Each structure stands twice: as structure tokens, then as C-alpha cells.
Length: 253
Image 1 (cartoon, rainbow, N blue to C red):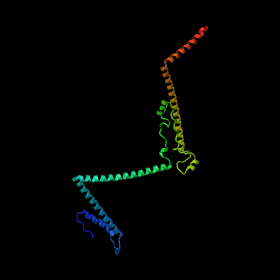
Image 2 (cartoon, one colour; image 1 turned 90 degrees about the horizontal axis):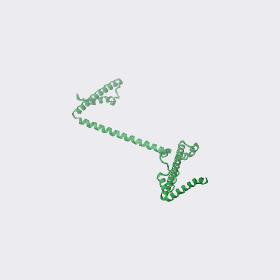
Image 3 (cartoon, one colour; image 1 turned 45 degrees about the horizontal axis):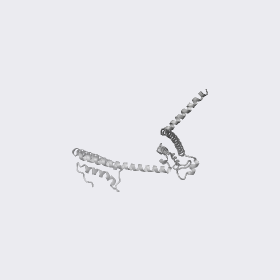
Image 4 (cartoon, helix red, strand yellow; image 1 turned 135 degrees about the vertical axis):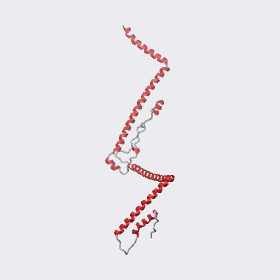
């Protein structure tokens, strides 16, 4: 049997209203007939009473909280700080969860790329100097009188052959289908690189010829400066040849 509530005590009234709501569900009466309309009316009445007491109890707690915030605001601040810390911890856990999922998807994507043979190592090369000899080696070769070393042949190990798939097990089907667009692009890139290498070699040969001509001119100038007598004899011989050519027709006259 439920205890009679104390007048003005909201807690006891709230407990009694809850018990009245649960009574039709827990009471067993196998002998008397049950009137459904009466049960419905009692349930609605007890439920409405329970809701009214719950609203009054909520208003009571809100009033006490307001008085507490006026008298001791530091307690409200501590409560807010605890709530913020809990919220930040929850957000950190959510961020870590999303980061783990992102790493998992990235690893899955990289594994799929390696399986399909579309790794970044086979992409287009950045623009830069070709594999020919560097200008420093060319300059050293010109100073020592030795020709520069020939450029190394282009490596074809990393480039797949046309008509062959980089994935194992599908070579026959891909060879029957013909070269793929990626292999054609790689062939065009190789041809462009070879043309660039040939142009660089031609430019280097022209530079070598110009340097050889400059060296020959410098050697001739040094030779004439070291042997001035030979330069004078050569000039005298040139004057004599000019005089003989001039005096020939006068003697005939």
C-alpha cells in the first residue's frame, strides 16, 4: 500500500503519481471483470497527474538552480567547465575515429593502385636536363684535350613494352587488344626525350667546335707574339711579292 504523501512535498506526490500509473499494469484480478473504458479513464487521469507533478518538480529545481547561480556562481562555472571538458573529450574521440577511417581508406587506395600498376613512378617526368654529360665535364674535357664521354643510353626497364599489361596473368589478352593509351603516351614521352637528347648533343658539338676555333686563334696569336722576327720576315716577303707584282708590267713597258 502506498504511503500518504506529506502536504507540500513534491517528491512524495511525484512518487505516488508514478505508482498510480503503474498500478493498472501490475494489478492482477482474475475474478472480477475488467472494464476497458474505466481502465482507460484511470490511466489518462493518473498519467496527467504524473505529468503535472513532473512539471512542478522541474520548475522547483530550476528555481533552486537560479538561486544557487546568484549566491554561488563559481559552482555554475565549475559545472559548465566540466560539461565543456566532457564535450571536448567526445569531439577528440570522434576526430580520432574519423582519422583512423581516413588512414584505412588511404591504405586501401594505395594498395589498389599498386595492384593496377598505376603507381606514381610511371607518371610523366618533371622538366629538367637530360641524361647527357654535364657542362662541367665538357669544360674539363676541353681543357685536357679529351672528348667528353658519350651520354648513357636511356633505360627502358621501368617502361612496359607496348601491348603488354603491367599486371601479371593478362599478357595474352592485352597483346591481342593492341597497345594501351598509357603505353602510347610513354612511347611519345620517350621519343620526345630522345629528340631533346639529340638536340643537346648537337648544341654541345657546336660549342666544342667554337671552343676549338677560339683555341686555335689564341695559339696563333701567342705564336706570333713569341716569334716577332718570323712575323717581320713574313711581312717583308709579302711586301716583296707585292713589289714584284707591281714592277713586272713597268719593266715590260
